[in-house]
Length: 358
Ligand SMILES: [Zn+2]
Image 1: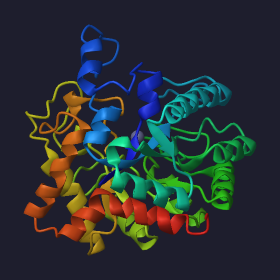
Image 2 (image 1 turned 30 degrees about the vertical axis):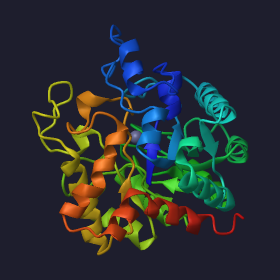
Image 3 (image 1 turned 135 degrees about the horizontal axis):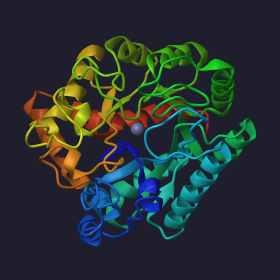
Image 4 (image 1 turned 180 degrees about the vertical axis):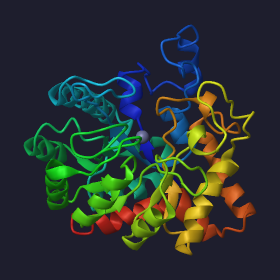
């Protein structure tokens, strides 16, 4: 059984116009003649492949970006937090439709999680994929009232930052702290027991967040800076701090985060020899720092605005992650370690974070 803690499912549905009920191959065919995005026709994630890959639970994101006037941001962003909020509400509406049709089941508390795992174990084919919702980048949270509304609607994790400067925290390639608004966000998140996703926080904002926040922390999709030096990756010091807090760190599959030699738009996974073994190098690094297998896991971010052209060359779809157990075993990981890394660590994290939620 697998758990993936970072998939931009609703972004794919609503911005890439992918109907994730259709198999990956069919979606590829539909995109054969499209060139509006570099990853067209290279998608790897859809509900049928999540099922055949035995993904019992996934963390699905909502994502709406806001660029402050005069501050340039990579990628598309809205000109106001209100527009970004509306974007995330459209994404939520898609998740709701998929729940209504029985493709997904929203999980917001412990008894639902256990009930879902029970059903998945008995009859995975006829059980919806378990969905925990997370917000990547908090700029769309217009006010703390919006945060409460989001929590009531089932939002259970937030990464305050994404790329560039943000309202509540500074993200990848930016610098600076979280300010008063960031502290307020973290305080209300702590009150509501929303998980802090540390992925994308720049170093200043990371350490200020660690000081300010006492609730549960994970890094849904972060690789090791010791292996691939770049501020998007997390340092050993950051990994050790998160381990101390009981965090789980998901390894991402984006090729540039797996090798030191990647040039965007030029390199190929074959050319740079980016494979599942590269993913396991990062998982192994976290395990070596922890001294055990309880903190490393998968947050693949597959189809997170990139596709096969920028993913390990030995996987065709997300279902091929089923080869990970064999590769871990080949490196001496026990069956228990493999179970931990492939999903149990996320589940245990949630059991602990939600122990008072009923
Ligand atoms: Zn991301």
